[in-house]
Length: 164
Ligand code: ZN
Image 1 (spheres, helix red, strand yellow):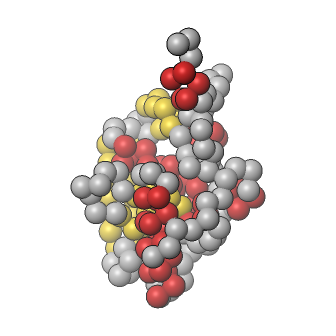
Image 2 (cartoon, rainbow, N blue to C red; image 1 turned 90 degrees about the vertical axis):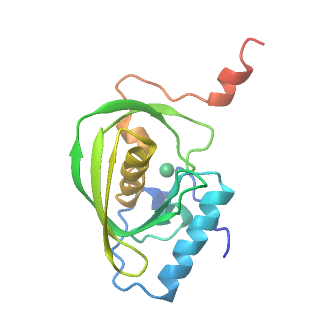
């Protein structure tokens, strides 16, 4: 496995809609494994293929070390319900966070790495947020597109060192 080079905003690949994987082959498996390695190296909970320069509909998510990483090939949002406001950050915009509008419940359909259809439901948790975030990447979106109106981005490290 290898750690891949991260693409950061304003790299134009982050604004590209990615393409469907037509056939899951050894290259797809290698990409998913390298993406998991890269997500771990970056201490992220999710990563989309265009964030490492590959414009394909592949994403990986792992909320905690106790969980198995989830590999999503050609994921599709099949349902969104409700709304909530939560702080969010992104490995492609390092050092910033912003308050975003996200769904309360999401349901996603995808293929796993063996080509089997999987369905994931999540509600009001980090997994729900990560699913929306990563699927957004695959459509060329960034979380800053979903900021709560008139909220600015902030740098968490400024708050930590402020006033001491
Ligand atoms: Zn991101």
